[in-house]
Length: 140
Image (cartoon, rainbow, N blue to C red; front, side):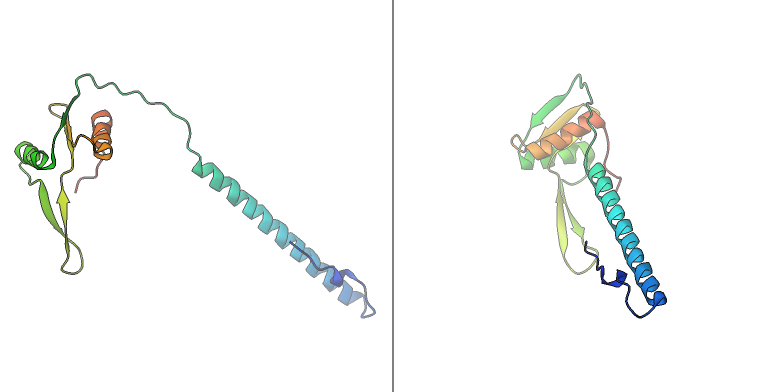
């Protein structure tokens, strides 16, 4: 930050003019300090929010069964276990467009069996989280 010191110079305009100049200068200094302090606190709080605390959780799954399965067989298994279709059209809220909601993997809590495509680590890892943590999707 830079401050102008020209207003501090006492001129021949009289004592009132010089006091106003000094007052304005100190108002700018205080405003700058408050702004700098606020930015500092914001930066510190932002840095604190982005750091995650260290943790270690242990989950033992004693009888987990993993079944690697292709997409068509996965849909058939889903339909036989839940009675729901493996693929559904989902209308969008606006317009005539729709999306298709397809089962990509699932965890059967009753048999402790995880069903997913063999090389899809994202889906298998997601279902493994269900095995360890239980239900965590909102009901829709």
